[in-house]
Image 1: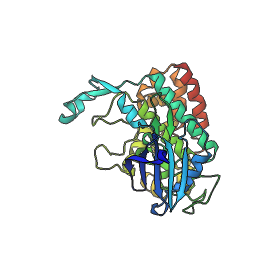
Image 2: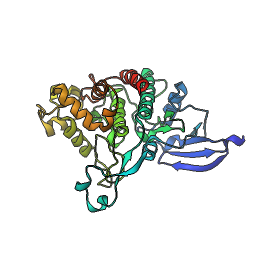
Image 3: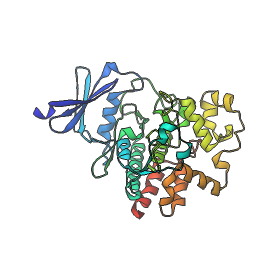
Image 4: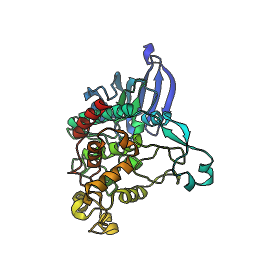
Length: 349
């Protein structure tokens, strides 16, 4: 049929080819045997077909032929990272300018011009989509701006379920993962939850909540970085080095939030590598954010999410954001809580 005729290749990755089709949709094609852990396009297709939510990309059609899975979906041109970059503009001297090197000093920092109403609308949709997924028992495992599409009406779609984990086990698990022994090498760079960096294998839905918090921190930045990127509260060194590193990321997390004691992070002590206690001891550093009084906690959240003060009654929102950052995953708030809170704030803007 004419509608399945490819017009051009939009993207080729290690595992997939994305083509624009004649009818304006896109086709993602993956050779099943070319995959390696944790990528599994068959699980991706099953989950996408099970989802019925306005903020999760719909499947228009799908085929499995000759060892190749092809999934056709609507074409949305802009991902969330590009969307955020589009809304930086106006020449403003950032407060950092005197500290920048000569190359960075030669240009002026761009300011985030996305209105708070639109920011909250995007955040609310993302949280709704994640709460829905978690209600199905699905861990996305790669929440980041590049896996979120935004159309011309600011409608958000979560995409790329290629490394997701289905706790409901709607089909076979390609790599023999179990709820108590999952692959920890998932998620991407700064969006990776700290328990993953210490090889906890029985992690669960909270890893996505952490990734969502990092994404929110980018939406709430005021200025671009000296290199022209969008900052987050986690820094893995990618803007200075050729590639970022987990150790740089975890050190930046500890710098911002403090180091918990082993009692405050039981999952890593019981189920993770010995690296945490070996490197950081058992007592913490005395600066763990959740040991601080509320005024200090609020000041830290306002530092990590610089535009937070633009939100009316922002202390309640700050409590929610802080709740997403618990190291103890039993205390990290669920996506349903985030979604309910943001729905209220989105209506107030």
